[in-house]
Length: 470
Image (cartoon, rainbow, N blue to C red; front, side, top):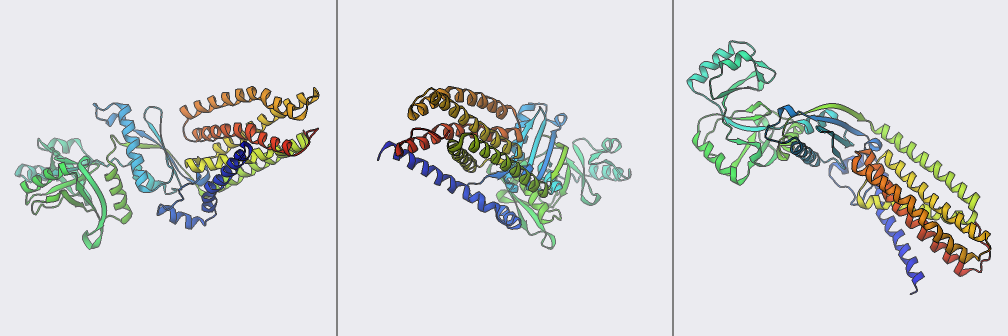
């Protein structure tokens, strides 16, 4: 097999591989939206898929602020931010959102984009819940009962979930007042024997009152023994289960509980129980987060954006095709083939990398195609110059590629450096633009220099050409 034949076989394999990678995306987006949503809920997505970003698919965009004044003074802000982002990411991954965007913005803000999620309230509750889980003993001593009677005389002893100043003064030393469900109140010991950090698993089960969903939990092995000893030492007493400063339940310990397992009851709906189990598994945020910006992009807006984006891309592409064919004739047709290959390889690479396509990403694709055309124009003009000097077609072609190479490399390298800075310091859509631009620029070098040269060499080797249509 000759070197030329090897090149053409390699190119053919590249085309077949690209079509193979792109077919799942084409098939996926031709499905009915309802059917696609069902498959996404079951996480039955193709292995290689060009994902659509928030601006194309619709979904929820939130900017959240970490309440730094409620951080543990010993925890550095940078470490707390990294921990919060990781916990939010774990929660969203368990929720089943495909290709979410979770990035830090500034010193204490987190940008969260959830493509396909239009129930912003549910998303807020899932992502923003602090999920500080504690297990404390209810104090049933005489002094506790006396203090509780005095507190009840105040009427409403709480400002939200925090005890009022008057109520706080009546709380005995070593105890703490908590609000429960249905206006219930509890005086609990300040000591916290176990927290949610000791949990190993949490899942939804059916077994509560009237078959209502409950959240079953299990402690890690090192905490299971502590839980067993705690229950054994307090048989007949109430243990309170507290989530985010509110007592969910305070069951009576009827005997030692071995194995480190238990349940949280709270008259949950299935969705509430699922969300609670997710946040407990993912862990507690280092401090509460506050949603300071929120917007929902509807699916119809995304569909309009896709149509407008592809329409503008198609018009631009057709205008370039027309110009190349009119101005460079047959050589322009060769450039168009290379341009089509560029687009095919770019989309296939995005599918392989499971990249997310956004509107700025579409702009990056268009710009990279423009750079590819620019490279072909440089080559063709160099070939024309050599042919005007009376040089044979084969020599003019070789010299044209050689002389244009340095200029093409210069323009592409400077653009790649710009794209690298955009990727490093940009967020969200800016990164999407940088990714598609980088991939497109690298591929445009290959298609403009290698593929067009292969086509010209093949044409010249099979024909006795004295003049090139350029």
